[in-house]
Image 1 (spheres, rainbow, N blue to C red):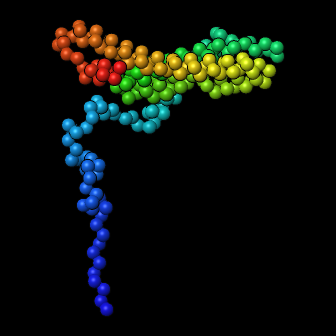
Image 2: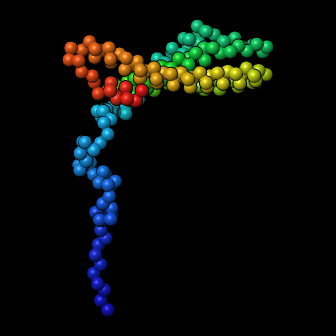
Image 3: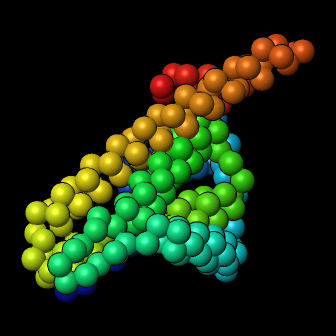
Length: 202
């Protein structure tokens, strides 16, 4: 009894049943530029070691600024008196606002590839400190001030979330305002694509 020669299986990608619109989109050579969304120019990525150095440099500056602010606004803590740690509160609020503004501006206009790791992840990440909020809240509870600890935690959470939201909206609208004024004084009188995209999003 002779066995008939078996034909090799068709590769899954070449299978006619797999020729769908989604699979065609995976073949980048066949995708026309008109078929893609207008998401702006592709950002160049930095090598990982450069990103690490940028984050480290920004984080060092942010941590130093936070330390200086805690020295300027010290918090008094005694067995019978626990003050609200306003330095940590304002550090987190200002840092969240700054990160929100940066995010809003970068949504409207892509910046150099070093801006986000240096200013966003590094500076704002090193400047803010939510782990200290947990530590200070635990110290308040340990000193028998649970209501003050709850108030401090809720204030920090609400204010920081609002700061991020207002920062994103303000950064985006601020970019639109500045770009409008710049285009108004531009002798060519043309508006940039980024400005039109930002106005459509806002």
